[in-house]
Length: 264
Image: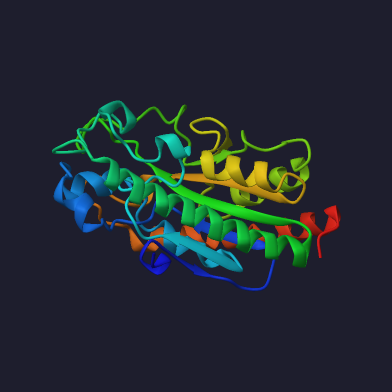
């Protein structure tokens, strides 16, 4: 299996990892042949442009395959969508995927997690503690491009998911991260950053905390798609860059908190 066609990685030196596991859009030929969704429909549920923000990490991991082939942020038994209720009510397949297709997609899933485990094990050995910025985006115009957006009270611009971690262990680091991100001068205003409102974190962060319970802090960061037109797929490039700067502004504080914990 050629992992470079499933995900890409850049392993650097340092305790900060940034991932964009839902950035991918590609499909294997066998998956594409029975895919009922159009490219636009798939893109709407993927997390395009999140790969750009992984530059904040010393190590970067980016998914290249669509979540409709295999969802790296779901438990293994749910990683291949099979029913509409697995995928926001969407009819994903023209015909039911056969056992061979599902097995191949799950082999991709397993290969990804094996490789990430090896990468994180080395980072743990070198630095003691490490932080994963688990970057995602989410829709807020599900009713249609000309319909009112989802209620902002329940849909913050940035949702920080900490529901899969021991929050008390990482409290100072999480509080510092949220404070610094909320304080950033974003186009002459402040971002609406709140914790565990829309999402609490997915399987990837859950697996990280289960696999590295004493050393890893994986922060699930979900940006509402205010930085793009979620129906056309067109980005606002200025806002993409501004979000990168906002994330970069949190790094000194995160590194300072890691050192307080005894990180190298």
